[in-house]
Length: 369
Length: 271
Image (tube, rainbow over all chains, first blue to last red; front, side, top):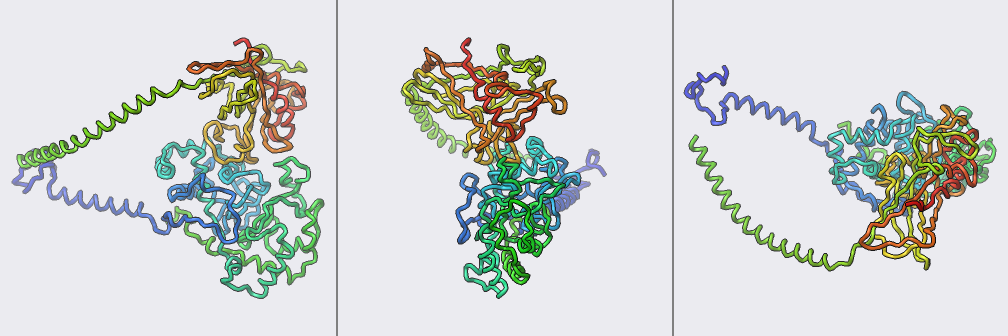
């Protein structure tokens, strides 16, 4: 029966609503609205696991850490900015064919390095020429990349985005895609109070997210604070580490932020000459950044080209003393470390694993909900 | 139905009385606003005369001829013919110098692009009145702003004058075709940047206004014309041979071109 037919009288249908509702229609609409509400709410209801509050982003410099290099004063971290940075980090929209996100290479469980890949992977199955470094304690880093080519945390994402073997996209291309995306328009508005999406805002949002990746609660940290004890092996390893490795891997960040040649034979296929590519200074040939060792247990494989699969292989490299020319002389004192000493150093290195950081909900992929 | 009408009517009445109450309040507020506006206007009349503006018009030349992109062949010192398809560079840290040695800083970063006529006209405001004998500026971007992270405006990396793999701005891009070039397609490309020794390509230029100097008057638009000569970029101190140096896109040989562009600017006295 149609209401359009004017033969139906009020008496036939009972009460006739002034706006044209009858009771049956009202019931239909009521159920329709209810179902819509439940569908909608199940999509938009945010899992508390992914909710970021101001409290989640409180920053205090960890005990014993130096002053950060990156100053959040010029890029105040807000829940909205952080959440936008997280969304961008996990969104393949940043790559040319929208197939590869930052997280494609930077896995949370590996302290944002990539487990098992010796070299980075990119779009169209292409292989990069360096091992994916972990992302942690970046605000204390003066330079980025194995060759230190990038001088600022905010500018770092431009390198993988524009690298032809990684995301292969242009900055203009990324901005155009984001500007045409209604959801991002709203996200940028809530983060920066402005709908105009610029490279500066894009990079600052990413810096808010990656800058907060701080690992400072490993067993080692608790040991230093006197909250936890080391085993005999770990203690012996710590002593050996402090007498053999500390020259370059300075506590508490386990790097002195310099570039060194540790006698690795250049790979003839990669032809990677290291820091010299940035500075042009002959002495910088085959020098690479001294990596921080936090979470090193999870960031395998090792070295700029991922040539060593295990920490045992790394220690063996130092202990064997078969160094390629022009290496840093300070590594010579590691020659002859016994198998037991190597094992103890590794036992110590494993105390640098920070379970709290590796499982920090704030850095989890928000797309899995 | 009449019941509905009655309800609507009542609502309207209610809103009216309500609106009147608000109106009275608003009237008071507007009076306060008027007074504030009057005060503002009277004070603004008493402020001193407006500081002068200086317009710098940049004209690109190839020797004596105005530069034309792609279509016109020019000759370098060695007689090799070439065309220019891209010519853009950063100017910054502009200063006006007085004869007594004092300087006036005119801050700003400017990306000058032959393909963008608007970029060839730089407007500097708040220039103090006086007679100046020289203009100096930086060709490129100072080291501080090469290390300052994400920036906007002329220094936005989206402008394509930025190296992503080795942080830093490209100070100058000149590209074109030269038959003598050995690069694929006989192109030549000079992308010059680098703020760190020994490959620092930041150069300073100082242009003298001559005997009369440049007098800046308040309440007046003052203008000067500057000439940038691409032929100068290919000579002094080093004569560029396209067959030997057709591609500079990192620090290799970059300072050669930088030394060459240091002297490519002159005051255009004709204007």
